[in-house]
Length: 379
Image 1 (tube, rainbow, N blue to C red):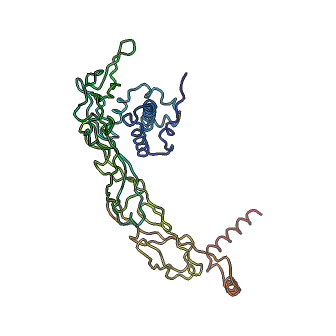
Image 2 (cartoon, one colour; image 1 turned 90 degrees about the horizontal axis):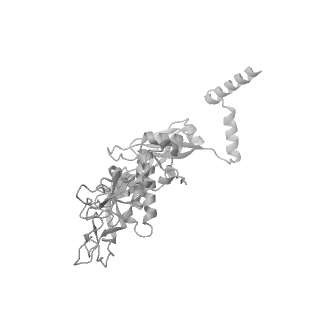
């Protein structure tokens, strides 16, 4: 009985409008989450299935032509493109080596040799900044827990005084050959006994129980340049998890989150704010007080300023993270109409209204003329 495949966008937890980078990041997170080395024991089989599922989804959605066929025809449009359900996990790793910078490379042992040392996994965390910190740059102290090399066994997983022994199933190769399709083909897959390492631990280290890893609390300081955007990542080399057999460690990626500001919104490197003024200020013009990230400033507005009109304060925005060219502040005028008037104010406005004509209110005058023409044409 055929199984129903989940929607690829649902598998990666992205929207249908997600771009290539979003899809790549989503796959990276899931692939690391369900990597077999992180999921051993009772949940290993389920994790491997999920890894294959997200790998299949990424393989289709990362290819523009395949994604277009999938969007148009669904799974039927990409039938036969790849079937990860019967593939070895090590083969899937090798297909996506470009994403992980070699983290999964070397799963395929060369002829006569075992698996190459695997680079450590990258880690991710989030750093929250205020808009003022974005404007000038800052340093943040980050605390996190990570898997690190066990001090007792130095990462071998073996009890001090002992060493891992050669895997009897693969003879130290890390790969085993299996006959398939009636003996016509020979399939080479990762050794299930040593999981590609070529050796197994007989006497486990009492400190890490044979894993070669211990959880450690880490504190690092990251320097964040001015002008960073929401979702950008700062990479800290070597602060990820340790590699295998002396391979280099992974990196720590600190993703930027910016706290909402009560006054300003960001548009690229410009800052936008709405400033309310009275209708008399709008009509007469004059100086108004405007907030900036560095404090308050006075700005001149001309008489006759309209609701929604935008004025620019040069170089009061945010610096570009590469060029450091500073953006502008865009001040949008919000004309506030009073809801309650006293008798004196009402009388003055009535007197003013009696003086209105086409010269004072050209837009209203033009609109009324157009309105007359429309009604005249309908008669």
